[in-house]
Length: 355
Image: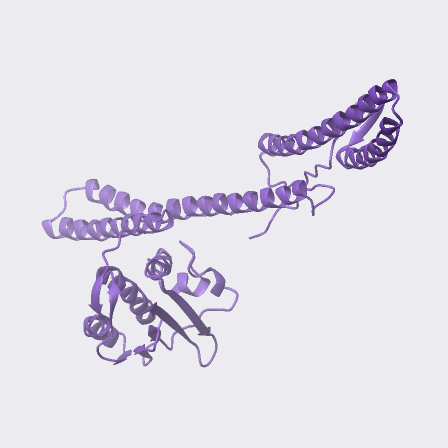
């Protein structure tokens, strides 16, 4: 994501005026050091004078020592107030400008500078979330506009003149398909929203991964055959782990559907399931169009679809892989992807589960 260059630079501001001179935080810190040094010298001198036995000298030494002590305390209080004042100034400036500005301080290695760095990280995170929300809203608006336009067009055509029952049934069937598309979009959006908010409910029970993948192979083998694609399976038996069976089926089904959708006629898709000492993993490998290297970092983002994916599957919404990632993370697992484009193109998704 391209970032706007920071424009707001807040240096350490002056915090006090003494004798017509403005003192910065760093200068006051130097003053504190000098005051403490003088205190030590004054204390040593006062001790000698007190030992001399003159009462007025004792009083003078006590007043001198107390004055330097109070001055040092006052200076340290001014420093602490100035640091909090700087933070307030930075936040006020950023809140008023409402831009992607950042703050910088004279000394990035002190407490104030470190606070500034943490503040910048927080602002970066906030900007990323806002940008993500803008993209989501734009994508949702675009993807809803298409089926709604089709629905409106079909209804307007149906109302132009009386038609035979068969034509009305055709129009209603087309409308039903668009309603199904909108329903799937809404359901996927709810899933993504709940997952990002940490509210995606899971019911974990012991389940047999081998049976789940074998069942999905049976379900999708006919669909793959219609496209002239060979769907194979090589699953190790008896892999039982604690999972939400419904969600894991959803994860595998999304990956298998994508593999079938983007595979050419005569291609092959392999489903592989293996178990190690500490983890089990499922592999969905195809010989499809592949994913360009520059697109790989973004494929799990909601609504992201590469150029070729849009061309070959115009009715997709780009939510499937995002949902797969969220389901895997909720199972304390992850998804890796490797892909090639060119003469030997293809994509391999590897889903790992801890045992």
